[in-house]
Length: 188
Image (cartoon, rainbow, N blue to C red):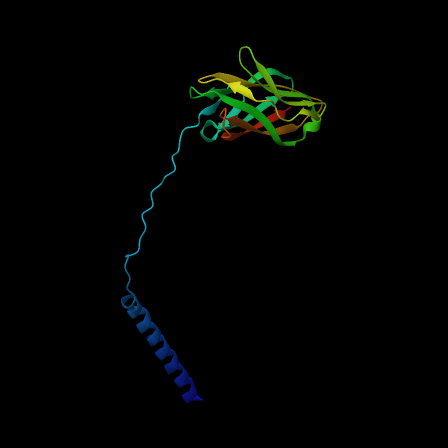
């Protein structure tokens, strides 16, 4: 029995020594070169957004002025919530598109529209908890222009309602557009 135990101990020691020799010599065995390589050059350019959003009241602006969360309370009437700034001399066409919502059944009147000094364009309209309009007609934002997103909101119950929209910005006479996310939150 003693011979078997000592033989197993010797066997373990030999395995340990062989493992150490292999590990210590392995870095000297492997060699390589960087003969094959590829140069990569970036071809995508990053530009500042042509249309940006600015806070007027109770708005939180995100992501390079291209997304926003507008918070208004019950009884809001004709509140300019966001400014829309055209940073170029080229006209753009705008529209709001509703893509989701939460708890709109409590809204007795919620109307969201674009406006400048002389023109208005209703984009989203909720009456008695039901949508009358979920997308607006295209609205012209003139080059270097400043327009507003205006909101009226009233409710019949306490809580919070959210209307999730895309602001679609179309370059006229093209199919090129950008989508900005704007969330309208109506609270009590």
